[in-house]
Length: 272
Image 1 (spheres, rainbow, N blue to C red):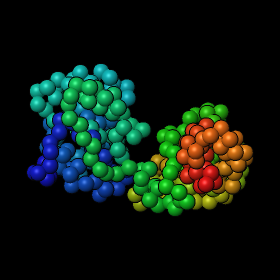
Image 2: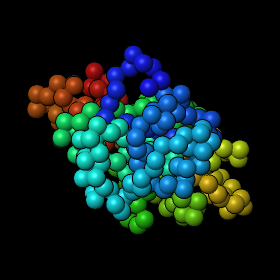
Image 3: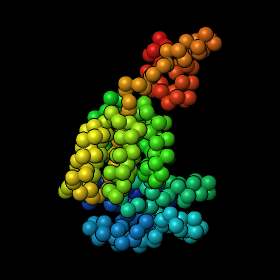
């Protein structure tokens, strides 16, 4: 492999670029060249990356519709001493992409697994968007029903909520957010790392008006900012009740953050 002093593994989880083909590590290229098999979602998509870097390794499809049936096949290859790399169409496998089934089985069977550092849409987006706190909740692709989306918005009222969405749905998503969080701030990232990359941060009304007038294309990652105004609403009374019961500040912060999704550090400070 690229670093000859690095430990070798049976199975490699390899991130691939989310848009710009230059966003791949030397170790990822070297790994993909030296393993025996590359398991990928769509061979046609992965082949474009492999051709770009002159990688000749054989590809086998591995996606959410066949991942269970592929497990035994991969286990047989590994028993023969073969090395396998897992990639998704873009970004990091197991991150809203297939891979959990095979990784769990490999760990149960005692095979060694490692994950390489690399491209990830959420990390790329968050490094572009300023936030008031480090904690956030990533919810993956948003649910299709309005009720389930409303439940998420309520659950993560006091936490920055990161999500994936499709260009066909994002306008409807923003309109549902407006109904439930009419004064919130939202960030939308589109086509990250590509030539038409766009990151917009604004209040919900302005974003809706913008996207009504502009065509929406490309992969989307977004964030609904936490509600700082009401994140600890009516918390003083709850703290007083728990203190009377003999709970300490740390215990109170854990209890209330779990029950009401308040920010644990904010509660702890108020307790003191």
